[in-house]
Length: 288
Length: 264
Ligand SMILES: Nc1ncnc2c1ncn2[C@@H]1O[C@H](COP(=O)(O)OP(=O)(O)O)[C@@H](O)[C@H]1O
Ligand SMILES: [Mg+2]
Image (cartoon, rainbow over the protein chains, first blue to last red):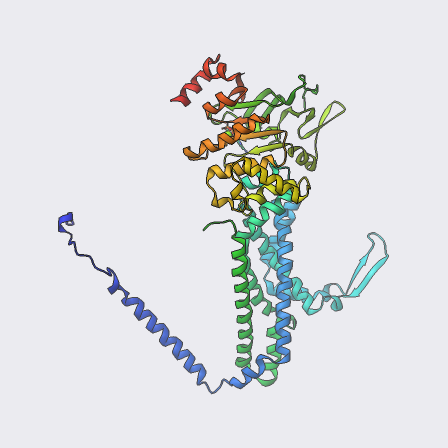
C-alpha cells in the first residue's frame, strides 16, 4: 500500500526550479546531433571529390537559370490549373446533380490513382496516340484548325498539363474539405438574405473555406514544385533537366545536384514566406 | 400539388399558410398548418422543442420546401408560380428574389465572421439588390445607431458579445428593407444578462409597425409585445389568440401543460 501524504508531511519550502535537473537527456541528444552535423559538414568541406568552384560557377549559369525559370513557371501554371480545376471538381462533387458527382468522382479516382510519372510520360508521348490534333465541326469533315501534336504539346506544355491535372485531383479534395468545414448556418444566412447559391458560395462560403484550404495548399505547392523534377523524363527543360545536361558533359554529378538543391530550397523558402503572409491576411476576424 | 389557389381573403393579410405539410423522411413535422399573419402584426410562436416551430419559419422563407399546401406572401405563392390552376416550382433565382422581402434572425446569429459589422450589413443590399454603396453605408450607420452599436461598425463579429452580435444580425436583416421579419429563438443562445438588450431592439422594431413572427420562450416578451400568440405542438397549431387568453386562460390541456412546464 502506498503511503498517504497529509499536508503536514509536505515540506513547506519550495524549489525555485522544481524540474531543472531533468534536462540531462535533452543535453545529451543535442550534443550527439551537433556532433553528427559537424562531422557531415567537415566531410563535405574537406572532400577532395567535391569541387566547390563547379558549384559556384554553375549556380548562375545561363542554362541553370533558364531551367529554374521553367521549373518555377511550370509549378505556377500547374498550381493554377490545379486550383481552378480542383475547385470546379470539388463543386461538381458536392452538387446535387448525379452526373456531375460521378464525373468528379471518376476524375479524382483516375488522376490521383495513376502515378504522376506515368501521367507525365503519357502527356509527353501524346503524339504516339494522336499524330495530329484538330478542331472540326462535329459530324462533318470541315476542319477548323489542325496541328502536329508534337508541335502543340511541347515537353513544357505536356509538363504543365500533367502537373496541373494531377494537382487538381488533390486540390479538389482539399477544397471540398474546406467548404465542408464552413458552418451550414453561413450558407443559410446568405440564402435568407436573398443571395443565389453561386453568390453565397463566392462571397460567404469560399472566403471562409480558404482559411482551411491555404495551409494544405502550401504543402501541395511545395510537393508540386519538387515533383516537377520528374519532368526531366520527358526532357521538360526544367531545373533538373538543365543540371543533368551539364553533368552529362562534365561528369560533376554531385556538384550539379547541389546546384539544383540550392535553387529548390530557395523557391520553397520564398513560397513559405508568402504563405505565412497570406494566412495572416486570411485570419482577419478570427480570434485565436 | 393539391393546394387551393384562392387569393388570401382578408385585405391586410401579409402572409398566409394554407394546409402546409412538411416531412423529413417518415417523420411528418408539419401536419397541415393554416395560419394568417396580418400586416404590422407581431405573432409569437411558442411550443415544446421539436414541435416544428423552426420548420414552420423556414417554410415561410423557403429555406425548406413544403411537401404540400401553399405559403403566400401578399398574393404570390412562395417558391411556386401559379400557372393554369397548377403550382409549378420556381427557378432558384426567382426564389432568391422572393427571399429579399423576408428577413430572418437565427438563434446562433450566423454573422459572416470574415467581414466587419458594417460589411455584414452592407453586403446583401449592395450585392443582391445592387444599391449604390454610399447610400447603403449611410443606411447601415443609421441601423447600427438604432440597435445601439454605432461605434462598433469596424469590429469583427468575434470581438462582440452574443447580444451585440444578435443586434448586428437584426440590423443586417433590416438593411434589406424586408416586409416581414422572422426570428427563430433569437435570445436562446445568449447569456441571461444579454437577453434584455436584444428584446429591447425587437420591441422597438415592433413599435415601428414591422410584421414579425417570433419563435420564443420569453413569455414576458410574448405577453407585452405580441398581438397574438400561437401554441404549436406536434406539427400543428393547437391554439392561437391574444396573449391574455393563450397565456392566462388557455382552452387546451396541452397548452396548459406546456405553460406549467416552462414556468417551473
Ligand atoms: N433537416 C432536417 N432533417 C431531419 N429532421 C429534421 C430536420 N429539421 C428538423 N427536423 C426534425 O423536425 C422536428 C421539428 O424540428 P423543429 O422545427 O426544429 O422544431 P422546433 O423548432 O419546434 O424545436 C424535430 O423532430 C427535428 O428533429
Ligand atoms: Mg427550433
